Length: 560
View 1 (cartoon, helix red, strand yellow):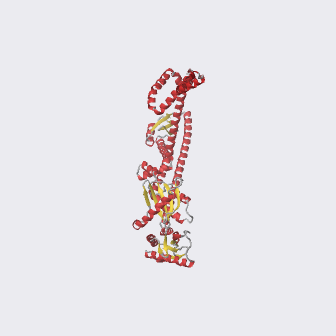
View 2 (view 1 turned 90 degrees about the vertical axis):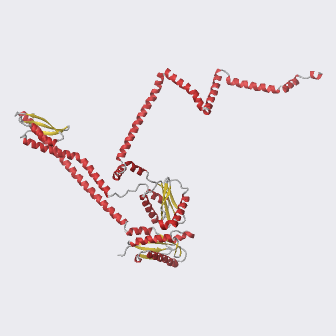
View 3 (view 1 turned 120 degrees about the vertical axis):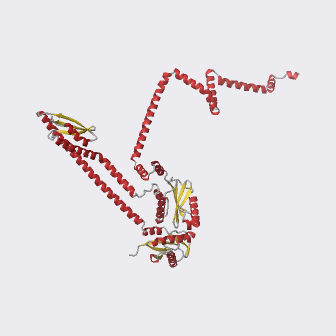
């Protein structure tokens, strides 16, 4: 006890802190919270700012998490506030909205006029467009609706991609895309096309010929093959006969080119597919065109010529009527005004003007005759007026004669232009007939077939593809029967010496000549030539050099 009494105040304070430490911590925390609340609430301005921040945060979260409930709760308040504000501040609302409404109305009117101008411009362009009139003429000639012809022209297939690849290996030589983007699948597609083509050639070539078209659903492929090359064109729709003719021409162009293929070559070929081929005009179309030209010229000249003839007929009837009524010496004039034939001038008191009008009525029909003639005696003033009227009548007659001469000159010029047009049409028809005769001549067909054909040998005189070689020989023999002469040229690869290669190339040419003779080709139209390893088509080794062991063909001039 004595020890407890002698303890210092410091020890007592430490003991209090140890005993009441949890309570002191809670008191400190409550004090911090009170200070925080006091800092947030503070005076009225501080409390208003804090409350606004809390409400804004709550509305923001409610807008994200409970948008529908917030809209349903606030919408009536907002609508009521806007309605009361409009009612209480109507003048202010008018002043505020008037400039905006004016600008909106002005913009709406300007847009309406702009749309009207654009629609009128489009309609005028459609009326003046040459392509539109061609489609109208095509619809009229074929007796089909114009909408059907327009849809047919709109859905014309477009070239999407062009591929050139080796026929045997499927190696991609060149590729082209319409959109200009890189073609990552070109190698895969070229290999697939080569495999399908080889399978078709092995399985169906004898019965159905070579594969020329593939249906890929929304797109179609046209295939054209030579002895060493395969060209594929992908279309966005079904290609027509004109596209197939262009494809044949593209293959001949690629075969005839001595330079290696590249993308530019395929791009030039793709340009030929960009516009539809213009078919040669038929005789009926030319006659219809000539008829339309004549009808247009006749329509342009109808009114002036008919007016001139009508005026001449009226003048003749008027002269006859004046002579019949003894009025030739009196100043009378006739003119047309507002669908009426008006007779003006002076006449004696005893003149039968009704008979004059009845004489003019048949020539003036369907116009009516109106008399504005003054009956006079023999005074001098009237005769002076008569002389004036006669002079004016002479001037009118001279002007009419000038108009008639101008109309006759225009008619003569029209007839001359029509004769020139007919001459030009005849010359165009003659040129087209000569061109078709040249293109369809046996020599021209033989030249195209010879340029596109070659026969490849495996080794010595053994054919690499016997079935394909026999098909080529049969086609050449059939073309030779119609006329022309053919040079059969044998080639070898670079293996061996020159003498051996020359003898082997000649033996290959002789072997192909024998096949042609067996197929029915006249022997006197064939010349066999061996050229050794000249004009090699490839300089690679291995199996690829087999392309150099071939026989090609050239046409010869006929023996005179």
